[in-house]
Image (cartoon, rainbow, N blue to C red; front, side, top):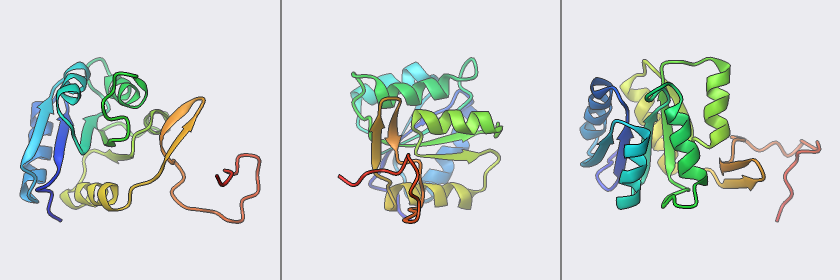
Length: 161
């Protein structure tokens, strides 16, 4: 995998963790990597530059600012890139945290500690297997269903448009 053509934003308040991610990305060709330590700083960078991928730590600042950043990227009318691929990293994998990330529109989620291969597999999937976006009254983001079930006939079956 060669990430040379991608513009990537890493948002993490732990400089050491961000440097590890940047080093891994650089090892596969990424050259254009921006870095922010706060959700606010990450959003400001997004308003000045266009990114292909955002990698954000869930536990920014007071604990949930990563979630707030994703919500803002997806729903804020001033967001320049509501469709950007977002990979959320976290050391906390309780079900409620994973659901919170999913429900604000992260594209994918990766728990820490992660392997280099695991991170690169997630990024490769984000790039080469993008999911369509869904808009409903209470959700905007990538389709949370990862596989089609043609046999499903329940009330929440999506209509074909």
